[in-house]
Image (cartoon, rainbow, N blue to C red; front, side, top):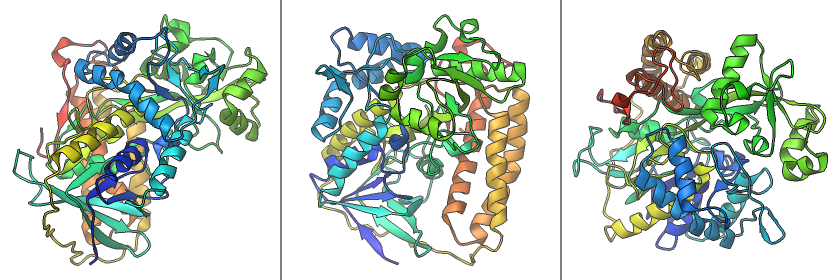
Length: 531
């Protein structure tokens, strides 16, 4: 079996992974693994922008206060301060790499989004993530020290010892086993430093704004290796995804509400005033629950986001991609409200990592949405995710280079074996379990939860997971099977974490405990050993 050896290994090709790869390439050879084409990532779909203090009327203290307030008591103030204060330097780095943010009259055209007290969101019209991805990919592709391995699905971390509860010095990450989709063979990628930048897990839910690749692979691999996942119950549902049978996963940016968009029900009534004094500019958890409540109250399939009171020329200039997409589906946002529904969007929890992206497993770093840094707490402030990706890519790369042990050690991983596994002859089993998990999570572990719903979800997931485990060991791996295994793993962790939090806080709302409690003013922690 071929073994690929590099100085550094990066899993994922969003902003965090690409920026880290670019920095690490100054010191050695970097392999970047992607499940599909590198452009397919959450970064590429990000519309709103990157939150950073760049305007004279803004300040670090204001951005910090907005982040802490939105985080509902669970954001780490130290992490929030360092992230916010390092934002301008990372913005300048993106500019130096060729990122083109929207500007007017010689200054950034800053957007306002829910939870922010100032206009501070840098954007490239309404395709900010695509522009950042373009600039970073161009820089990485031009670097002779970076090699992309496309259509490789990470299977598991390669460990020096057996998976176990991680204790200092007890084990080490040597790299990653990855399925080469062209051949169906599992290959070994070895490196002294592995950086997980594999993104989130929106596909755990039936409705999501995320691309198909977001099946939580990095989180699940880390969990199986014995690492802790933190705050996995805090799943952010974006309030406004386009409701249309031909518009799979198309996001309607928060920036539309920041520019004056009004949420209305089918009768045209503006309802956000009933839920928050901030109305449409309330944090996402409040807006998503408000829409969910209105849909349940009225029996409607969707709500509406009304932009028709704004100038058509402004809408076409500020939101060209959204305007064009809606128009292609017969919706002219300058003349008619946009039908919208909430959808799973972002995980505030993830693999426990420190202020340098280090995990408890030597040789492994985690950055971006796959990681839990302490920045987001119980709810993410809009557009802080791209900020976090860039700040922690920089900090992790510095740590990797600083911690580098010197010459590449001789590593002899355990060979990948297939045992008696055979090609699958019942792919319908994968599709059935895939659909059942995502529907179950949407219905029972979604925007509004209850003890009864969570108990039902836990019971059903126990049975489904047992089926998947048997199937996994009986048949040769495919990308679909690997992804099914990972979403099942994370579904169980999300349910367990949600059941442990007997309160409502931030993104976790349960009808049985509708108020926050100081008893639970702490993170939830889950590992494969029952913690």
